[in-house]
Image (spheres, rainbow, N blue to C red):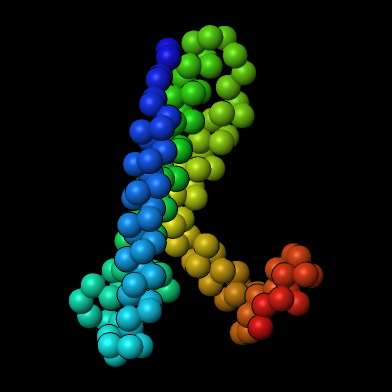
Length: 136
């Protein structure tokens, strides 16, 4: 199984899409205080880079999901060639999980469950002491 993609065409299309989404988000963030835009109505919450469930988040989730599908295709190709496939399945599963986490915010639910289970009322501490010192 051989899949051929035009690298230059794909690169320019992905860059144009990213530049468009990021430019729109930057424009909203710059114009929000100048024009006194309300962040709860219109296109502001859809394009804002600070909000959840926005265009940028969906763009990221679609890219990660595409990576997961590509890894599944690689896995199928490696299996038919008689190669080792467990690591490809693992990678595709992880990319699928990260893609879903972007959309349905699994990490937020896990943090809430851990906080309520262990009685933490403040911010949760990470396992990295450097990260704990850097966060307010």
